[in-house]
Length: 252
Image 1 (spheres, one colour):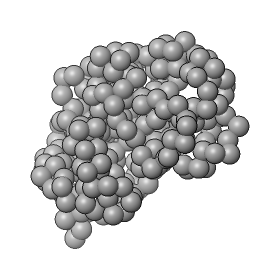
Image 2 (image 1 turned 180 degrees about the vertical axis):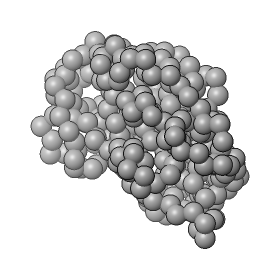
Image 3 (image 1 turned 90 degrees about the vertical axis):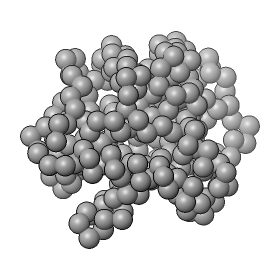
C-alpha cells in the first residue's frame, strides 16, 4: 500500500510505461540485470550496491510510528533470544539488527521468516513482519514494537525505507520530473487510493487514509537525508554495508 501514491500517476500512462510489481528485495537484481529501468529499492540496497543514483525529492519514509514495520514478540524485549526476520524487506531486517544491538543492547540469533502473517507456529521469540501483512496481524497478546517509532526514539530522525533509483550509467531524460509528477498525482488522489486499498486489504478506509497521510511520508528533504546518513553509519559499524558510499542524486 505505501508505494501506491508513488505509482498511481504512472498507472495512468499504461500506453507508454510498463509497471512491474515485486517485493522490495527482488527489485535491485531486476535493475542490475536491466529487466527494469528504474525501481523503488530498499535503502540498504543503495549502500550495498554503490552503482545507483537516487531520484530527488521522493521517498517512502516515516517520522515516528510507521505501522507497517513491526516486531511481534512472545516475550519481553530483554528476553528475545531468537528473532525471525521477514526476508521481503532487506532494509527492515538491517534496521532490526541496528535497533536491537545499539538501542536495546540485544544480540539474538536471527532466522528467516517465510510464513507471511501467520506467526502462531514459529519457534522464534519474536518475528519481524513488514508491509500490508504487518497491518493485518492480529496482536493476540503479542508485544509489539513499531520500528519507525523505535528509530525516532533512538535518533530523533525520520527513517527512510525506500526510494526510486536508476543505475548511474543509465541516462533517462525527464525521469526525475516524470516520477515527481506521478508522486504529486498520487498524493492528490490519496483518498481514492485509501478507498481502493481498504477494499483490497479488508482494512477500514479511515485506517488506510491515516496510514497514507500520517504514518508514511513521501518527501526526501534534509531531515530524511540526515536520517538516511545516520542509518548508513550504523549499518557500516555492524558490517551490514560497505564503507565509503556517497549519496548521489540523479540529474536528468
